[in-house]
Length: 398
Image (cartoon, rainbow, N blue to C red):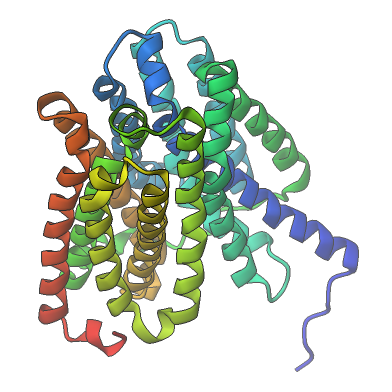
């Protein structure tokens, strides 16, 4: 049997552009999710509310994504993918325009709901689009570019968004994201081919998946870990500037460091995941717990805080990748379903973490967020130990 003909170089080059465009799209969507973390104090001051109240931006956004990922996936299963992508980016851009002109905090929250709905559909379809437009034999590269776009949102998007907010006001940050999204929208319209839906009806697998005890435990573990992480991370900006002696520029540096540490986590995962996924999950959980316990002690020194931040950021990305690699192996015939639920669980945890962190700031103190996160991380560690004992298959690739 003859191999399929190799596409000409121009066609192959255009496919690379399409994959990179999807990576840039992922960067834009993830930047807008996380950038409020770097702008909480400014937004709170503008609307004369507390940072804990401003944290509702994070909670509401995450919970809308969590609640709507599966329903929106179900509603849009038959739609042509390019048109769906363009439609969700149109909503995304319009919602950012509303963020820029928001005349009250409630209006800002409404704009975030529109962005979150776009986010929910985007992550339900984007991996499949990237795989379909990838050059022949480059599917792994396509997913890698998508993951890089996501990582760069923390490495570059959040710090740059904070710098823009510092110099020109937080509304400028959202305007900048909206403008970049509009450019991406134009490029998507011009460069992407028509992509008919290839949905295979795996929603019938939902009851079976929900009866899988290992999958449910992995989702529970994921939820608790992300709740722990965001109880502290959501308030890291006011924590550093008000509890520590960290200057405005140093706060930006620490946020940059946190995102950059994610690249270290990605490297460790790619190097050792095949041999020791479960062990990496366990070590990462312990490191996250330790980093949160040390937050208050470290915040008095930029050097100590930098070390804690690198450990925390590395462990968090490593943990997310290891959980994802375990979850996606559960049922290869329902990976779209499994990943949609995985995204929903992560965002449920992010929302719960931001909410609990807000309660800690309001009813205990801003300085307590690290300890609150550590207490929840200790619970995650208990779940992890239970899973290792309950499911021998986890130890096969320990």
